[in-house]
Length: 232
Image (cartoon, rainbow, N blue to C red; front, side):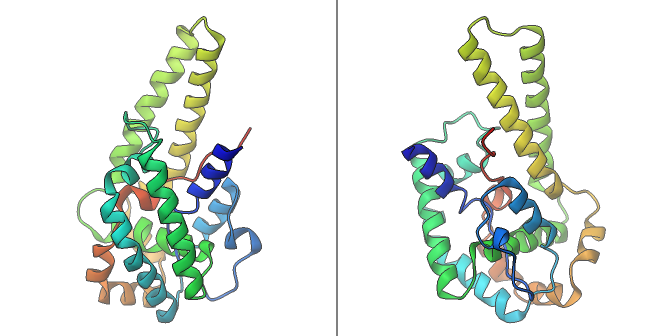
């Protein structure tokens, strides 16, 4: 039970995003299941007020000391299916601390966690990645995860372990990989112009004017990491 509670707390920090004009639904204020996160992602196009965007950046800047101190374990957690390093111990501790800080800093500024998450998807998952010339890091991560998916699926189908416990672990791993692929796909876009065109123009203008601040608090894979998979 203690581990389950900890995992639920971890998902509070995993993705970061913004606040909109209309009040968010109860589900998106405090997302708990995968569908809540999908709703938030669908709403992450703007428009956003300058005041909301400023508060969001202030929260991100307040997270920077924790991120810089624990960058490696945080990235390991974000890459938990593709990485070979374990995500227990330091990774969970670091993400737990980020989650607590996100909550407190957002609350001080009148933002919900859903607001922060929506803004992260908009600013970092979409706008910032779409304005850069190089391919998004998520494109390459998605390819690696798909290769892993194929390998796991073939292993289970063609050469399943005789031990039922080992087989069950592989089945869960495959489900987790597919879960991460599903949530990563929207951030591995290739038509950057189309993504930018869909983002509200005034919101884009504010973001461009504050590009230096935004880039300073880019948390890389952590900003597009999926939430923990729903329990079966």
